[in-house]
Structures are given as structure tokens and as C-alpha cells.
Length: 315
Image (cartoon, rainbow, N blue to C red; front, side, top):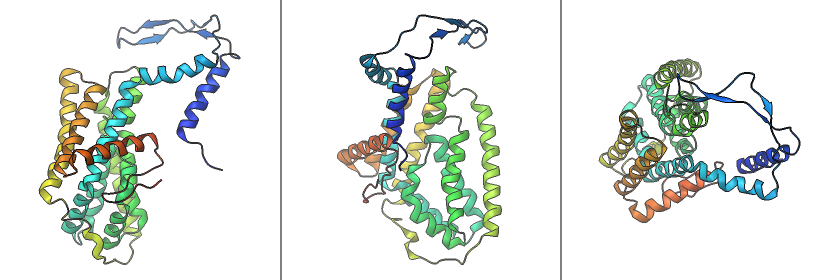
């Protein structure tokens, strides 16, 4: 038994909805504009029956291209945004930055957990980081082992912190942006409230992780592989690539506040950032294009993970 592929589930939901148009009586609510928000809201008690319009095979099939067309902006930011971060990952910048953190901390392990958790939580806040962590797992395990922490702690400061950042992010385009567009509320509205909750949730997560780690220490492992690819890019190019990513999001936030930017602008900014990261990381135009294609595949096939630079993709 295998859990169905997400695309299979989506197609199944569309077919089920089409079948139900032949069974469930049709009806609708009246709607009016809310003067406070400008949104169209349901008028209570206004439900009434309307003429049924059961869908045939052709009409059901047309739902798929129509859905793609209506959600073009959302699809573009998912595909191109995901591709941009695969480009950054392919350059090795994430691995080099983490390896540098390992060297600088040394035995000051009390600082390692909040710093590492902050890095991954930032990835969750900005781009819903999840699959990208897979390529960093070997380095994370070595890192935590050298500091005397077990594998559960490594998961908590990486996957766990990224999940907290994604869940409470005020600007995550893959969760907040899509959900707010579907809910017909202003894009990235409520950012201040979500930011406050994010800080509180992150502090609780780090405190609990540090409490667990203090009770679950293991013998310190010495492993020379901790210097993985540390000199591959050079500190200057690594810092420049990471700076490009942060500046891209800063530009988008400024555009969102000052000029009312939306998904199309975010897609454009991420595309430019991805190309710049690829060129700075010496992937070349072809290598950058291949990384974008890999990102498109990862977005369409979420069960597959992209390997680190020089490694194959596993599914």
C-alpha cells in the first residue's frame, strides 16, 4: 500500500466534485461588499436553490486547463521560486555557510543550537525550506555529533526550526501568499501579528530544544569530514550568494509596502536572484538553467529531493 501521489489526489477531488454535481442539489448564497474590507461576503440566511448544472466529461476535463490559467501567477512563483533556491543549493552556498559555522563555533556548543535553528527558521520564513535540508543532513549529523548532541537534536534545529518558520511566517509565498489569495484578503496582511507570534513560537521551540539537548548529550564524535566543501566557493562568493537571496526578499518587501507588488513581482525578483546566484557560483548559464529545470521537477514531484552539488537527485 502506498499513499497516492498529490497529483492523483487533486485529480480525484476534481472528478468527485464533478460527480457530485449530478447528485447534490444546486444552491447559492447572496453576497454583498463589506465596506470595512472591500471583500464580497455572504449574506446570512440568503441561501436559495438554483438550477442545477451537472458537468459532463468534457466540462470536467476543461476544469484542469482553466484552473491552470486562473492560477498562473501562483504556479509561476512556485516553479520559478523553487527553481531559484535549487540554483542557490546547487552552488553549495548553504553547505559552505554551515561548514563555516561548524569551524567558528568549535566547542561553544551553547551557541550552536539557537544559531543553527535561526538559520533554518529563516529559510522556512522566506521560502518554506523543507526538502533542501535533505542535502545538509550528513553535515548536520557530523556537526551535532562533534558538539555532543544526538540525531534528534539535529532534526529539531533543522527540520523542526524550518517548520516553525514556515508555519508562522508573515511572508512565506508558498503558504501565506497562496492562502491569503484564496481567502481574498490583502496579500501578506496581518504581518505584524504573525511576526510577533513567530518570535514567540521560535523562542519556545529553541528553549525546548536546548532543554532536551542538555538531557540527551552523547559522546563527542571527532570527524574530519566536517570541513565538507568549505573552500569550494570561497567565503567571498558564499557571502555574496546569500546576500543576493536576502536582498531579493528585502526588495520585494519594500515593493509590497510601497508599490503594492504581488506574485508576479515576487516571481521576477526570485528569477533574477536565482540567475545572479548561479553566475556568482560559477554554474554558468547552462548550469543555472539545468538547476532551474531541477527545481521545476522538485516542485512538481515533492517526494523527490535534489542532491547537493555534484550529487545525483534521488527519488
